[in-house]
Image 1 (cartoon, helix red, strand yellow):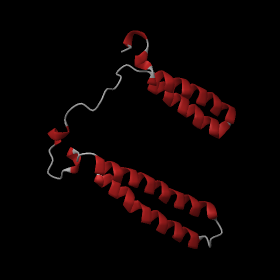
Image 2 (image 1 turned 180 degrees about the horizontal axis):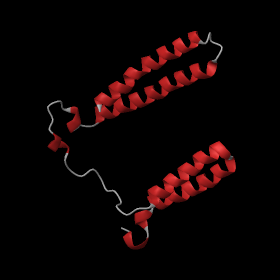
Image 3 (image 1 turned 30 degrees about the vertical axis):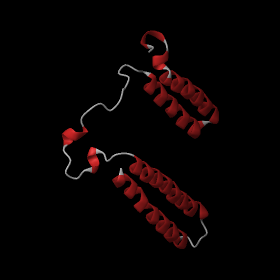
Image 4 (image 1 turned 90 degrees about the vertical axis):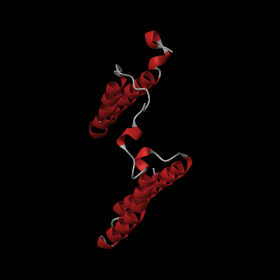
Length: 133
């Protein structure tokens, strides 16, 4: 986890330097690009801080050990629903939302409603019916 945190933390000065260079190259007349690059540095900062805090709280992972073996990472990674159709419905809803941004906002609304239905269906998939726990 420390490797990922360091990767994000090293990107912060990169985006700030690129933002300043962008500002000089546009003679500070175009503020949208400069603002976006500064905001990107801020987002990278937030992810880097989060990963740094998580790296302090958890034990080192097998991928953090330079002498680690592949077999150390074996074991269960969680439960994944093998026959679920809800991720496909949610992906379709996301594509309708993106289409709505390009064509018309009313299409975005249809995709958002479908996305909420798909997300609720996916979350509560094992809470009802034959597969309920």
